[in-house]
Image 1 (spheres, one colour):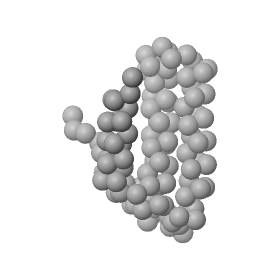
Image 2 (tube, rainbow, N blue to C red):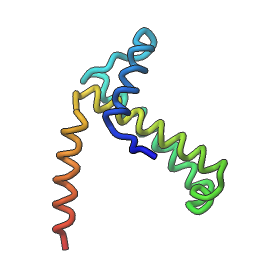
Image 3 (cartoon, rainbow, N blue to C red):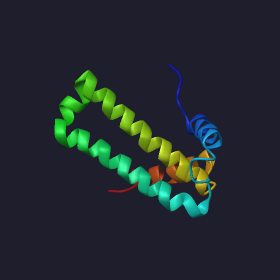
Length: 108
């Protein structure tokens, strides 16, 4: 199995945005806020699945798990749209993530 990385996700989002450019909001800094709000809505759907089914069932029941993973994919799709809106590259995200990781590893 191969890794599924940010570059691949962003390219897929660019293709979706191009395909639906006449139906969806354009990608840009001014629409980033709306994409964030949609992402929060999708995050709420993930939370609802776990809340309604419990963590064990959400992780272990194949039908519930499938729904959970689908909703998490929606969150990631909007997350990548937000990154595209603000021109955040996977390399920038990796640098910030790595710095945060290193700082957190030094705590306590």
